Length: 230
Image 1 (cartoon, one colour):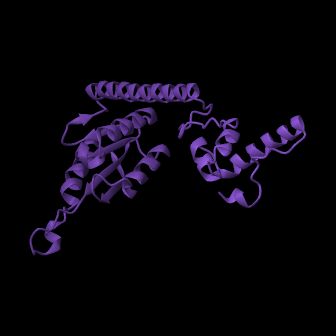
Image 2 (cartoon, helix red, strand yellow):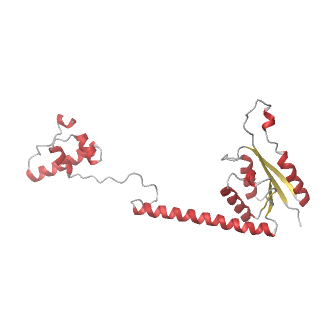
Image 3 (spheres, one colour):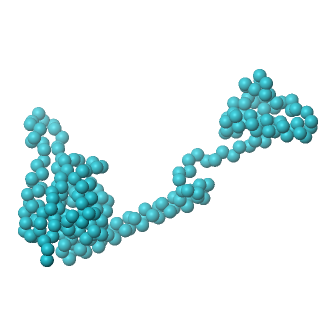
């Protein structure tokens, strides 16, 4: 049987400087995590492929070391991942669950030194099953929420499911002549009807043309001359 290839991941960060002391004293040393992990790998008889590390806050969105580890995992460069503690590996429970579920699908075992989680053991494999179920439940919930959002959007006038935005304005073109005859300006008429002034003018001209066709005379309220600036 070939020796399993193993990867180690460590993350360190700097503490806030509250005293005027040498900055080096505030830096967590990666060796504190890495050395016991190397000893564990040696005890198991595994072949250490690579040590991945980051010096960043756990809340950091992007971590080059972790990104590289996940990319190499997908390339099949190792069969086991060893970390010091969950919070050194993942910044949230959600990220941990998704990463472990991906490791399971790739056939990669995961060991957390401090939490004594070892998915190469029967108990660890049972944990993987629970984690996979949690990940599938989360995906199902997300799918249900997306489907509900799309259905709501379609019922409210959009086909694509994109955000609805402002409700569509129903333009009452028939009110334009009445408002103009009562002395309301073009701008105010447009404001009242919720459209632009150009739309109001077009609607009025269309109505005036229809009146000319019916009566043979231009409508006296047509203010296409100087008064149209109102």
